[in-house]
Amino acid sequence: MPDYAHPETLVSTEWVAQHSKDANVRVAEVDVDTNAYNEGHVPGAIGWAWNTQLCDTVRRDILSKHQFEKLMSDAGISNDTTVILYGDNNNWFAAWALWQMKMYGHQDVRIMNGGRKKWLAEGREVSTEVPAPSPANYKASGPDNSLRAFLDQVQAALQARSHAMVDVRSPAEFTGEILAPPGLPETCQRGGHIPHARSIPWGKACNDDGTFKSADDLKALYGGEGVDGSKPVIAYCRIGERSSHTWFVLKYLLGYDKVLNYDGSWTEWGNLVGAPVEKGAAAPPKA
Amino acid sequence: MNVEQFQERRIEIAGWQVNLTSYKIGDVYHCKADNVSPGAQIARTTGATREEAENAAIAKATERLSRTHRHEVPGA
Image 1 (cartoon, chains in turn cyan, yellow):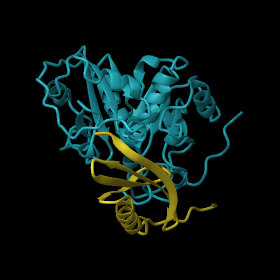
Image 2 (cartoon, chains in turn purple, yellow):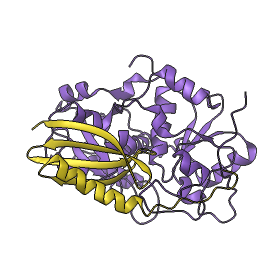
Image 3 (cartoon, rainbow over the protein chains, first blue to last red):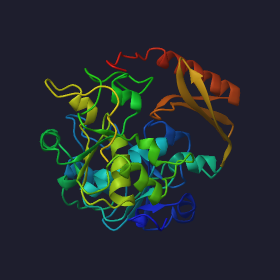
Image 4 (cartoon, each protein chain N blue to C red):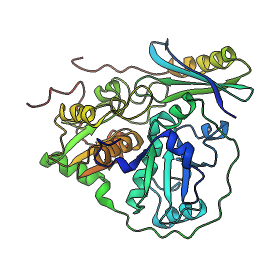
C-alpha cells in the first residue's frame, strides 16, 4: 500500500492473520449489524457495538473523554497499543471508531483493508469465543475538534463557500428521491442535500472486494469533483458513519490536511427548520 | 473453524438492486441482503442450507424494501 499518503493506517487481512494475537495488538470488530460479530469473528477480536458503546446513549454525541477512556481500558487497550479495526459494510463503523480514536489522540490505529467481507471471502478462520482482556489504564487527550464539523461550522462554511462539501450518500438520497437507504426507516423531514455539495458516494472509494482503490484512482475520483485538498473538506452522510469512511480516505489515504466529519449529517440538516436544501442532481463541477 | 462457500450475487427485490451474500460457518449457512446503493444491510438470516438462509433473507428484504417510498424530485 505504498502509494497512499499514510499507508501505515492500513493493514491487510494477511497481516491480521499473522499478528492478531501479538501482545501489543488489539483487534476490534465494529459492525453496522451488531449481531455479525457473534456469528464468527477474527480470532481474538473484541466486538464494539456502535449504537451502545461508541456513542453517548443519552444525548446525541460521540463518547465523552471519560467514556472513551473506559472503553479503551476495558478492552485492554493502552495508549501504545496497536489497534486494528474492521467491520462489515466495507468498514463503515470501523472508520467511525477510528475517527473517534483519532479525536481522542490514539496514535496507532489502523483499518483492516477489505474489512469483514474480505476476511470471510478468503475463507479465513473465525471464532465465536469472546475474549476477556485484562483491563488497562488508558489516558485520552483531546477531543481534537479539528476533525469534526458541528452545525454552526457547516452553516458558516456554506455561507462563505470556504470548504468543499462532500455528500457521500447514495445518488437517490442526494437528490431527495429517498429519505434513507432503501429498506431503512426515514429519519428526516426533508430530502435533498446541502447546497453546493458534491455527490461522491462512499462506495466509489472501494473495489469489489471491499479494499480501498489506489491513490491514483482516489485522486481522480475526488479531484474530478473538485475535491483536491486545496480547500478544507467537510464530509457528511445520514448519521456520520459513511462520512467517517470518506473522512478516512481523504485524510489518511490521500493525505488532505483539513478534513472534517460532519457527524450530525443529514439527520440533523434534513430536520432543521429553515435550513437551505437543494434537490436533484448536482451541477457539473467547475472546470 | 473456517468460513466456507462464500458467495455473492446481485438480484432485484421490489425494484431495488440487492447484494445477496451467503457463506457457511460450522453447520450453519448465513445470508445477508444489502442494498447495492448505498450498501446498507437490510436482512441477516441463517439456515440449514444456503437456499433456506437466502429465502429467509429475500423474504425479509422484500418486506422492508416494499415499504421504501420514492419521493418526487422536482425537475428530475
